[in-house]
Image (cartoon, rainbow, N blue to C red; front, side):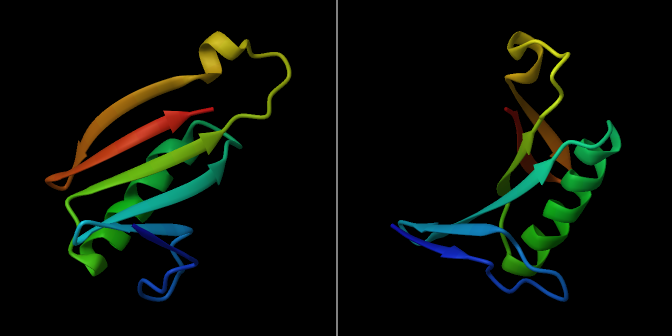
Length: 91
C-alpha cells in the first residue's frame, strides 16, 4: 500500500490517494462550514474519481462546532453520485 498526498487530479488537487493492491482510493478532507460542505465535497470528489478512473472514494468532513454533540458529528453514510460510490464520514 502506498499513499500520495496532494495527488494531482486535474486543476485542483486531491488531498489523499491510497494505492492498494492495484486500486486507487481517493480521500477528500473538508472542514464543515455549512450543510453545503457535504454536497459540494461529494461533487468535487466525484470529479477527482472521474480523472483517476475510480468507482469508490471517501469524503471526511470535520465538524468543529462546539454546540453539536459527538453523537451527531460522528457518522458514516454511503451515497451513489454519478454511478460512483462515495462514503461520507463525519467526524
